[in-house]
Image (cartoon, rainbow, N blue to C red):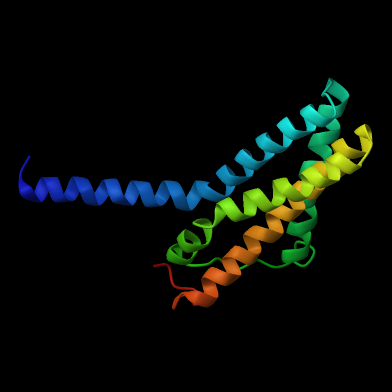
Length: 152
């Protein structure tokens, strides 16, 4: 491979890494946290099939509520942040994952079994969404392109 070909390969490789992290990091963080939260729940209050579905209801409801809120009742689009702001924000994902799992673990520990499966999963998702929002706000405030609407 020539030097130009070698540089092009590395350029495309770097772009591929960037695309992968931009499009997957928040969902990946949520998946890691939800898996950890499920393990916590099963340790504190052993799982069965009905409790798994209660967990699903609790974990998914905050997404519907937040979507309704940020779109003002599904009537408005919400703005996106530039890729570099998202990259900076998602670099803090250990904080949002840990905070959400930690808070929900306290709820699960304190609540009776059926309540814990519903409420702890709801608290986990809510805390994760709020933490990701805060991470994005901090990153946007710290980066020159934050809130600019540019795509860099």
